[in-house]
Length: 95
Image (cartoon, rainbow, N blue to C red; front, side, top):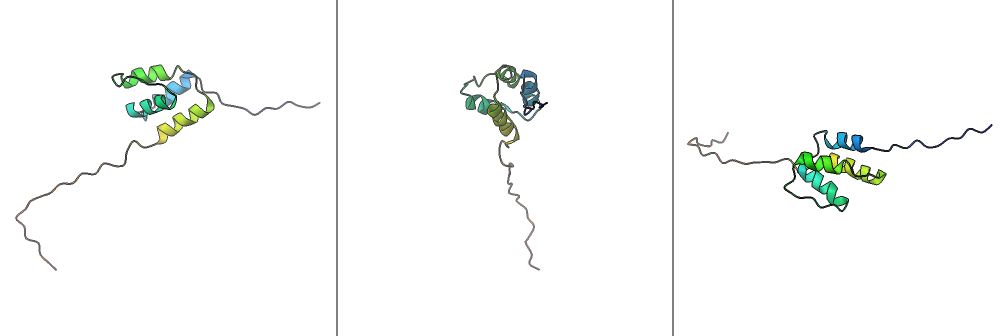
């Protein structure tokens, strides 16, 4: 007797999406980027929590889930550098 087998697939439900977005790595700009990638434009006045509560209820395909994970893992910017000029009376000496 032959056994039936199938490839197990993971389907993320709204709770999983909420957990991903609430993990702390989703900034407001990343939420806007994810929404735009899905063709959704949201108000810049919405709070981060409001965006998460709206976006997690939408159906998410496997590719969109991969996009979400890519947005979460991508850095916002390079490290910020600042410079400062210090004025002093000390003389530079050569050794």
